[in-house]
Image 1 (cartoon, rainbow, N blue to C red):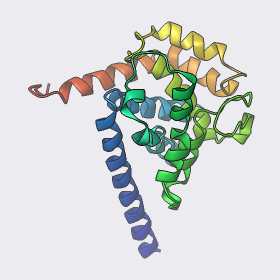
Image 2 (cartoon, helix red, strand yellow; image 1 turned 180 degrees about the vertical axis):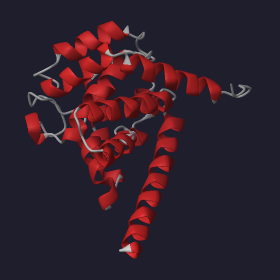
Image 3 (spheres, rainbow, N blue to C red; image 1 turned 60 degrees about the vertical axis):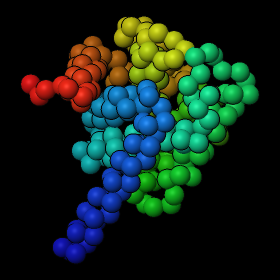
Length: 220
């Protein structure tokens, strides 16, 4: 039993190290990625806790969520950094990142949840998403959670092609998508977190952490 525990912990450590390397590569390629991934991870963990999931699953969903856009490593820079809305052809290229991300994560059991998230985080509750048109609970629970966290953070963050929406406007968009784009039960949990101030606290903590990491900053 002790040997199995040690082997399991070693597998976990190796997997987390692999995630760190892939995330670093994605962050170098896309300047908006770093804090986005931190916020998404924290939002995902908060949602999972709110849904009453066990602690080990909360942690797994969290560290797996940071891999959702890893496939964008293969997306051409001129599309990824475009300051204009994408053409249909460019959007078709962007959509490929879901499949590329799943492939990049290989076949190791440790990455099973991350593979599902990478492929499915743009699927929709009503079946009108991509790449497979899955609907409802055909989409993994982890991907349904990440979808909400990812969209909210994208809306409320400044991007090359848009200004940041207010948290209130972002939340309204998430609520409006319940039952169409998003799992309505998860939306309800996310709205509750917003009303409790959890989302605002997470955003503030990630911003403070990013400021501390800047060259020349001093620990408080």
